[in-house]
Length: 169
Image (cartoon, rainbow, N blue to C red; front, side, top):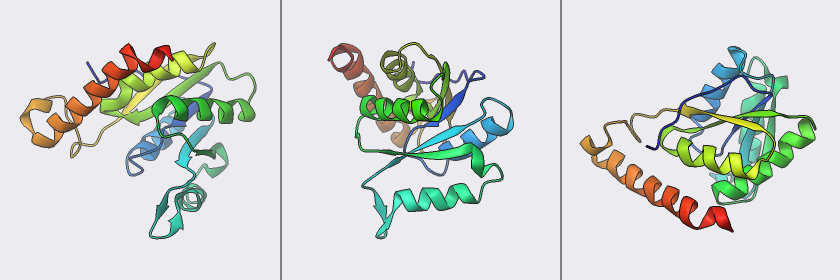
């Protein structure tokens, strides 16, 4: 119910913030396989790691990539998926005003909600989603591990909140 993994060739890949050890790596692989010509990496504006701005870390990381010119950082302030997707859409529009298709990269358990949010918030664009997997966080047989069950329950609550309340605001 939570996991959708159906990437399609798109104009742009948007990597939602979080799981920096998984999501950017998947986006890099998708870029190399020709799923898009550009990747936008969402990075929280106010986040720091050991007093170093996450934006600075992200920019340094992008310089190490073989196709670093095909990447850009999108500074985001929103704390919800809805707000983040809205901000990422602005970054995508600045990159190319005629973006007609977007591939969203996020955690596997977050794909269903992220896809629904992006389809509602980015009108007129075809949206698909790719699932970045982290077996320590979540697995399809979620009921077999305590951590997976906690992640699943939390995401179900967020999905239901999105479907019943937040999408109508």
